[in-house]
Image (cartoon, rainbow, N blue to C red; front, top):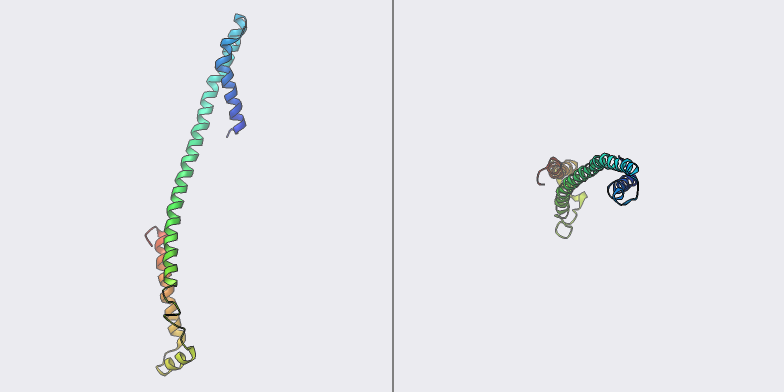
Length: 143
């Protein structure tokens, strides 16, 4: 791709090709020679400049499209994170104080249940909920 400086040089040549031959004091042969050079330069540069501009516009369009998609994804992921954050705050200690784990272990043991199995069940419930929220967000649905 042509650099900015190269484009400026091409534009400068095109500027020379369009105005200067009309205001110089050359003899007819010299005038015709320079006129033909400038006209040819302008004719050759116009498509190159147009192609560069079109490529730049396409690159900008693609960048905008990607940015818009990224914004939609960011919004969806932020919503999912907000749901997980809300869930994390749903069981405050002032409402649900920490139990006496030693006492809980004793009570459960009488019923033939281990605290490990209860803890594992609770963790599965939590992680399945997180998986549901993140899975939906990653697949493109509302969290």
